[in-house]
Image (cartoon, rainbow, N blue to C red; front, top):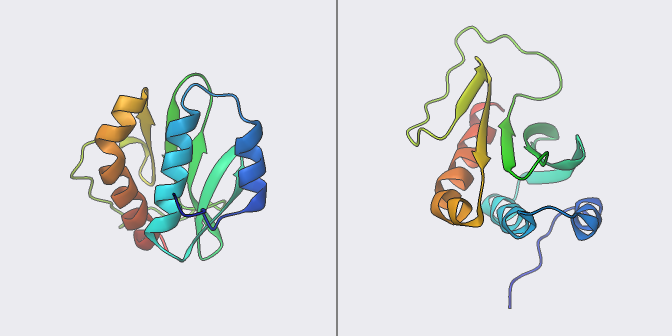
Length: 130
């Protein structure tokens, strides 16, 4: 029996009503991310789950289409990017700006293959952007 995710009731309700081809992968991603560090919180942003560190959004899911995209960002307000860098040994991150990247998953098999790496990236991103 899986332990209950100690996350937001609003996110749980959102996911319960969600119709998405990668819903099972999203649920697994949510559980893994929330279990990875007790300081991570969540809420619904951009019509998808968003994970926060110290109250600031850091990784927000994008559920458009039939993929699951993790958007790595530095919060709501634009921040100076001079000197900011984030090493990605996985090669999974696609950079949209100096401080914004995405990781897109197209299938349950792809999620299973990259799950550990993505959860690790999320944790490192949270700490690096705090």
